[in-house]
Image (cartoon, rainbow, N blue to C red; front, side, top):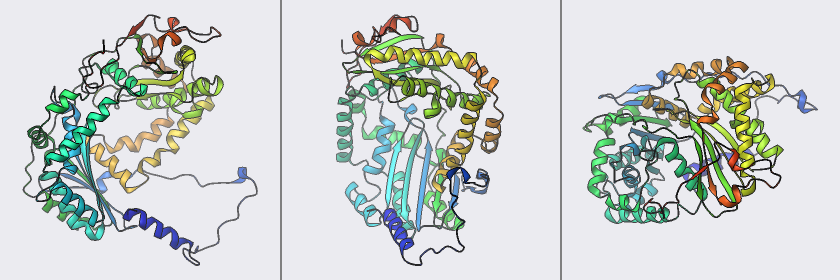
Length: 496
């Protein structure tokens, strides 16, 4: 049991003891019927990051969110730079760096010694890299903060990349590579990303056995110098601490650490999605399907109207049209939906997804495309609009539901440059979306003629369509399917 779990259990037991947590006043009576329940209006304003933002000497931005409820401190270091910086032929390098910072020892401590000391301190330390950032985290008891922070910073400034741990990590990755054709969902995701962004774009480039074997310690250290330094760093700390004391700790921890060149912005894709029907052969009883096209950046002026439209069309769960028709009305899929996925550095995508029995794939896809056309041609009714807007507005406070969640927002916005006004204005802009706005942005940003449909499954069973003859694949998006080859899991070269 972790120290955090122990504290929560102890707290829960204390509340169950006689007299513990006694209410200061008698609770109001419970109404006889649910419809008589009443609640005060929700009043919430997003926290202003300026109240929590500090700068260390040298310009490193630090967000501090004190929280004295529990004697814990959570420290996060986020460095701008991710897999988009992987050199050609060494795909997986930044992921390797993210993993080995924690796994490979630090400073004077070998990997096992570091593990032992972190465990002794009842702390948790981790590191990982994604597409755009490399993140490291420390969760520690407040009383052990100084030693835990020292180990944490040593992990980042002086990683050892211990050879046997690096070899073990490579072997683990290699085993995962061998399995990546086992799940049709993995195949769908890989080929869809290549269709949408181009196979040469970093979002579609994936680690292979050759690129994994090409990564050595010298490569790790070069990538470390490129990404993990104060020039790319944003820090967030939440928990049981005093702000001035924490700033001094961080100043000392970073002392003498030279800032390198700030990582460039990720490159935009140069390829354009080619509309049409695509398939990958896989002998499975269901077809897994994506339908979509390129979409918008987060700063697009139509963003808020598109978020409302997305909720109505397919991102609103059981209240959305695609889910209701494909799952609830027709029973063609357990899970079906669609969403606008805005990009940060370049336009993202619109994607509808479902999986259905082979013979009903065509019918489910036809219904998805029908719903796209409907929302482009006619404004939604008032009840649909109210439900979609209400769900976005009422769930808004969850973005800031804890100090840790708030820190994540602050740090992400600092790295990406999103202004606080975006959050201040968000709900008002959602409220201002009209039914005609929904129709207008759907017509502008959704066009079946520009969409691709990719299905992974057994084509001879999928192509004819349903037994009732309501739909067949030849009727969709031009009808002629381009077969994409299944790829070798280790080389990603076509298997034929």
